[in-house]
Amino acid sequence: MNDQKSKRDEVRARNKKARAPHQAETKYSDDGANKPGLATRRTAHRLLGAIIETNTSFDALTDDAHGHPHYLALDRRDRALLRAILMVALRFRAELSDVLDSFIDKPLPAGATALQTVLHVALAQILFLDVPDHSAVDLAVESANRDPRLKRFASLVNAVTRRAVRSKQKVLDKIAQAIPRSSPWFSERLIEIYGAEKAAEIEAMHRIEAPLDFTVKNTGEAEKWAEALEAELLPFGTLRRPHGDADITQLAGFDEGAWWVQDAAAALPAKLFGDLNGKRALDLCAAPGGKTAQLAAAGAKVTALDMSANRLKRLDENLARLGLNENCQTVVSSLFDFAPEELFDAVLLDAPCSSTGTVRRHPDVPWTKTPEDIAKLAELQARMLTKAAQFVALDGVLIFSNCSLDPLEGEDVARVFADADNGFDVVPVVAAAITGLETCLTPEGFVRTTPADFNREGNFDGSGLDGFFAAVFKRRG
Ligand SMILES: C[S@@+](CC[C@H](N)C(=O)[O-])C[C@H]1O[C@@H](n2cnc3c(N)ncnc32)[C@H](O)[C@@H]1O
Image (cartoon, rainbow, N blue to C red; front, side):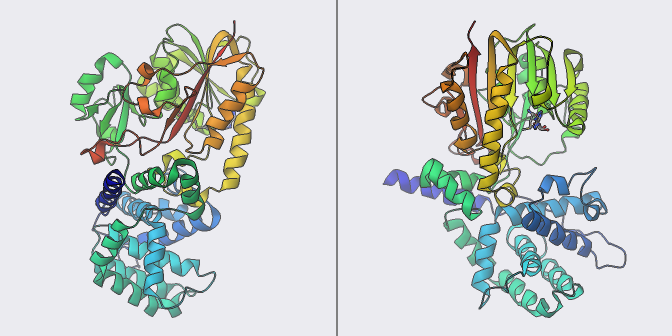
């Protein structure tokens, strides 16, 4: 009972902490004929609408090369503000909906997504960002006035946003005390998989910004780079800075390619191969190349395959910065069409997945993905794993991984493969291979991490991992 209470208190404390995950810019760009800051808010409305209505990913819309034209029209500072607004609007979307419902007498008219979006964007700023309240209110009202669909709701927008300003502290206390949740299907699924208590811990971690983790190219230099980056060296070799908002190109060691950004959990699968020196490694689904870099840095001769030429280009650039491209050849192909001349000692299948393990960084995922996506991806992963097995030499090792929190895409796929008569055996991961994360081993010897793992008492900002799954198989000789 006491235990449960302290867990609940911890979850509340985490929510409190999450009140101001970003310190956004407080100055606004002057967008020509428009009111300063208006273009940023109207673009935020447009992008949030696209995420919610058409399931477009936040990353695609805010890509600095190929993003939404209205996003690309903003300057660097306004892009940062817009991203901060959308991040909290998505992280706290369920709570913002409750706040809104409690402020209005009757529900918003059906199909009033545009109105809801304007209100969510304003409430996100008022409650969670360091933006002057009057700006958030004025720009929301102005946006409504300029949109023919919303003009008649301008007084409602005014009333709701002013009420949020007046009752800010009360609302924040209520949010801090509630059990955190997300989109209904996602929250229900987490409870179904992990139980109510762990699901609440996971969702609490989804409220806060992930730390910035680095993998060091030369593991012997980890301490040196920990010092230079003012980062902590974690027991499993990753370097961690508690706040994820640094401009990484300005950090020590970026230009010389001493490290790359990679979540601690994402770094685990490739480490499970053990000694790769001089071995032939195949990285299927390789781009943008975090794990390819690990394989190459470990001394393997790597073939990095991906079906996306654009993403492989990024992999090439990343490996060039790290000085690792000599150990690596790239192949643009679907793995289903790949026909190598020789088999490989080490094959990594880091399969496409729902990405539900990365919600701390991608808070759109619970709102853009569906249970149907998970079922389809699980079926694809099973086929990919069967295909990947054909590329493994006798006595070679095959690792299957992905960043989903759902066992349908992880444990279940691995179990079906393990039970099939395919000449492969499970190699249970031993605790020593993941020092510090021993609790993340499943009874079968798979690795399962969640954002609630690596939970360090008293070091809230340095806690957590992406959700990841990894299983190791060996082909019989
Ligand atoms: C989760 S990402 C891989 C991340 C990468 N392993 C890393 O650590 O940086 C999945 C990748 O699978 C690729 N992909 C999807 N289907 C594929 C297929 N049939 N054949 C090859 N690559 C595929 C996607 O283009 C995407 O780059």
